[in-house]
Image 1 (cartoon, rainbow, N blue to C red):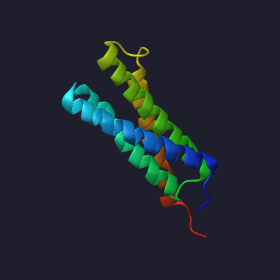
Image 2: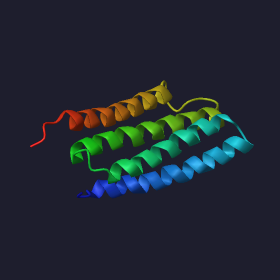
Image 3: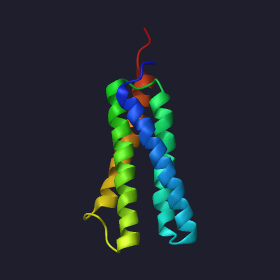
Length: 123
């Protein structure tokens, strides 16, 4: 498998998402339990991103799009949840649901890429 430069950017982001996710889980257990959902969201998608970067079943363009959807979606979702906890209001109207929809589209992309591989004719 050939890695693109942006694959390393996603691995860097995964490390940061994982770090922040663990910090939010700790804060959720000590301060406000609502931070736990933001932490889990980041941590799960960081792990999924690491796996998808190293998987070879998607082409580079599909992988880029799926990873963008998963990382951006989980990031804005978690940021909006944290803003609601810390400031009492979200960053932007409907930002958490928008992040959730982006993540769902990313997972749909994983499913679609897998289905295309399953139904591809073998040469």
